[in-house]
Length: 180
View 1 (cartoon, helix red, strand yellow):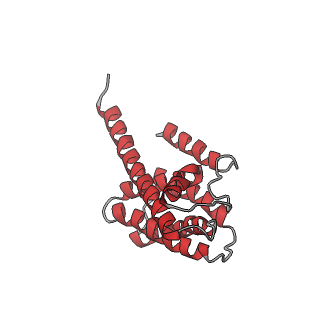
View 2 (cartoon, rainbow, N blue to C red):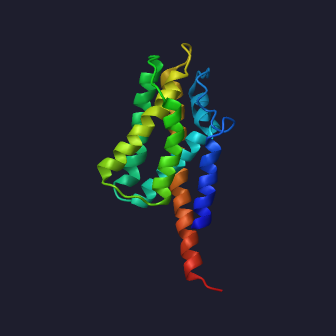
View 3 (cartoon, rainbow, N blue to C red):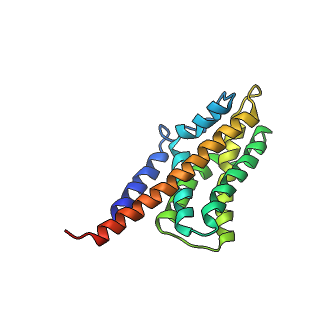
């Protein structure tokens, strides 16, 4: 488990470097569903946060299993709507970077708050991810098509986080039950 935590820490630290955390350059010229789908996959900051939401949801189980990812995707869409208005939200990029750290720590440490608090945490970070996606769109972009693309990619990353959680649990189970 300590090795897993070390790898996750290194992955998060990589998101702090400009070469890796470049998905939200605010100069994107996305125009369709495909570019919306590809965009979140280009930034390690988004990937780490989305995988962490999936892992955390899987660990919390129950209603959190579907509610955390659904909340993230929904609020991210609302943030995108605000972003296309051009309204400036200060520190959006910093909060996006922090989302990877905070959500990863919550997942790795298996932190459990009430379901309402868990949902609020996810919603807070989702807003800023969505805002950045909307803010960087050009006037020629089709917001609905682009949004559908980044929402699908985000849902798939959540699912990958859930699968990652299952794989880690299975590996730990096998390691603890099979003694050579």
